Amino acid sequence: MKKKTFISVLKEKMAKVTFAKISKLALKNANNNYKFLKYGNSIKQLHNFNFNKGDISIVVCGGPSLKRNNQIKTLKKYKDKAVIIAADGSLFYLLRNNIVPDLVVTLDPHPTRIVRWFGDEKLSRKKIKSDDYFSRQDLDPAFKNELKANKKIIKLIDKFANKLNIAVCTSSSSLVVKRLINTGSKLFWWNPTLDNPEKKNSLSRKLYFKNKLPLINAGGNVGSAAWMIADSVICSKKIALLGMDFGYYLNTPYENTQYYDGVMKIAKKKDLSIFYKKIYNPILKKYFFTDHAYLWYRDIFLEMLKIASSKTINCTGGGILFGKKIGWSSLNNFCKLSFK
Amino acid sequence: MSMLKGNYNLKKNVKKKKLSREDELEKKFESEASKRLGGSMVYVSKKKVNWSLNPKEKK
Figure 1 (cartoon, each protein chain N blue to C red):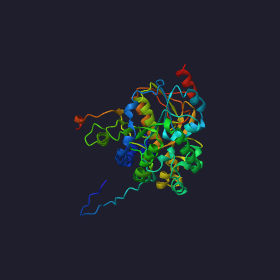
Figure 2: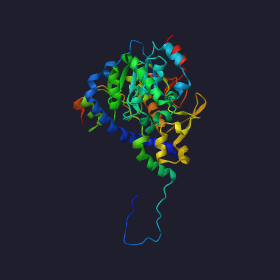
Figure 3: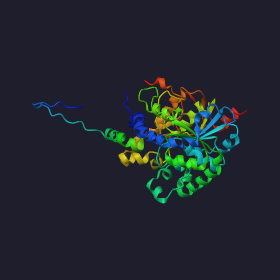
Figure 4: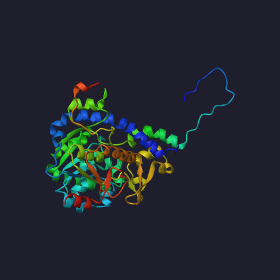
């Protein structure tokens, strides 16, 4: 039998370690957010609601290809026809290009980081120094000057706030929730599915009976959650994906990858290569590389596609998300064919 | 694997298996993952959206 690679072993542990990392924090945040639920509605209100557009959605995520393949012209051209659902990490990019998504999704319970996607009004040099998450990664080059980027985001969010609809997960941190409430954006609350709600002592069940909000399977990350909302809340028939790479371009230094700081806590530089895997994308005829978390996200996404109600086309133009149940196209061709 | 202790000596010396570098890193991964290396959210297989749960369904 072929020996499993180190990264495959780590990937198989992801469900367990993520549950250990997230579940308690998600529940704690959901309890704290209970008092804020009155500032919004249940996401149930968006069930089968297409924002007065058609039954086609474009899910925009913040992966590196979003900026590299810059398909913004096409997005602008079709923004009034397709429902645009943005993962929080792509909001800055969309707003600075004058595209207001129909819905923004946020879920990560991290106590300090996520508010930055919406502008942190209390950001200081000291805070930046203590966490290089945004400047280090290849997610959005605009974050290289963090204070400047933050000011810009605050300005943009405040400018477009009355047009923004946010699908906010009850697991979100209080910093995110307070910021969103202060902007006056419309909030649509939902619960994360933390475990099987049909089981005795299920945490999801406990969460549901506390606030009666729908439980949504988030698929491990905000991009997958945005897709799930397009598929099963908005009920789009066709979904295009943008910026959903689940991988890195080969010339990306390890230092610029998402989990580098965590890996360096347990490994030495000489060990780094075993934490990453090169994957050949047969559609693009090009190699990308990935890490344990993105590999896990990719597997989850391919599994979720098996029970999808919609057809999904990856228009990212990069990364490792390919498989039997997912089509590939440029966004331009997708839109041309979909909006004849 | 735990070792049974008896009141006799074995003829052969049992050497403790040395962990490979990968095994060591795997062990460290589990402890660090709960802080920095885990995903952003949990995933539950074969579930989509539960709009409502019936209290009677509690098992």
